[in-house]
Image 1 (cartoon, rainbow, N blue to C red):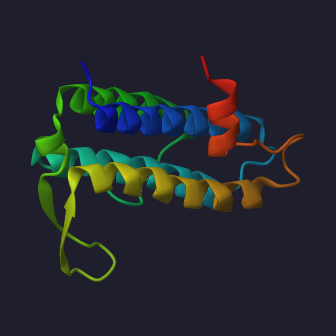
Image 2: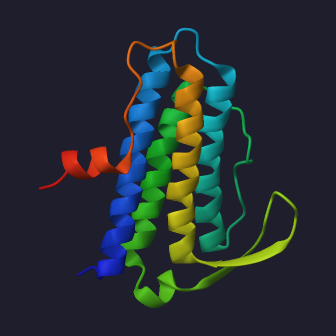
Image 3: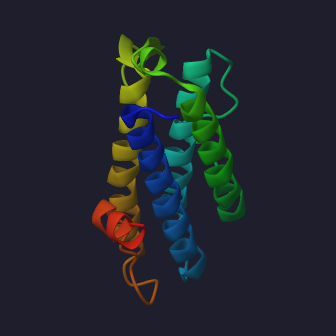
Length: 158
């Protein structure tokens, strides 16, 4: 039985999966594909993957601005989602409140954040970059994707 906090965070990761999948569909349609948009998409996926590594205290296997093809990005969406869901399904509230020490890549400073806040960071960080990506592909796709939380929440309500 999941706690309300677990359920909330799992829903956030499911939103992340949905929004990134919708954006990937749009990027596959883009003619031409904006290279900076692809770099930003790969970046938000790397960031999510890096946080899973931090939470599990395992070596990172990706870099922050790793170059990927769109097909590789699509695969990374599923890899990240599976890892987050597996983690969240087994995490109790104490685990979700556990503090993670990390180095902030922007300035190299030592920082601390709870595992729960890492999940929220990933979702907000990705939303920020999805907005940038959508602005970059405007005019190169027939219809811009609407990947806001309200669309997800209202389309997936049971």
